[in-house]
Image (cartoon, rainbow, N blue to C red; front, side, top):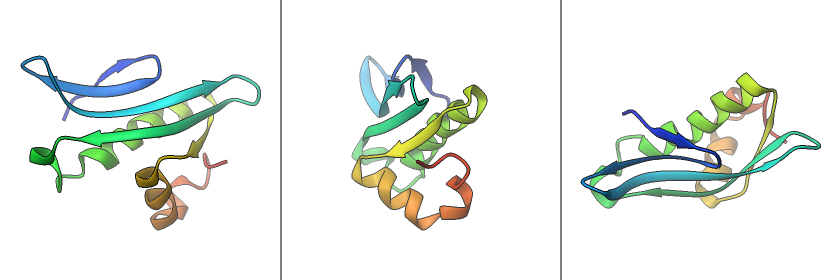
Length: 91
């Protein structure tokens, strides 16, 4: 699935309706993205869309030299479940 990106969020829409979104706050010193919200429309749940959204933030953080602080419940669980995958970026 392709996501649109605006500063502070990745998302996808269909027919003008939000389908899925992850939002993050940006801190410059130290360089941290704090993932504070994920949303996936019930019709898309079970297809790893939320994980893909979180990974979009993580990939951006890696590219730009940021760390990532998972704050929303989904991101916290994901980071715990896959500690090795995220250990290089997790605060």
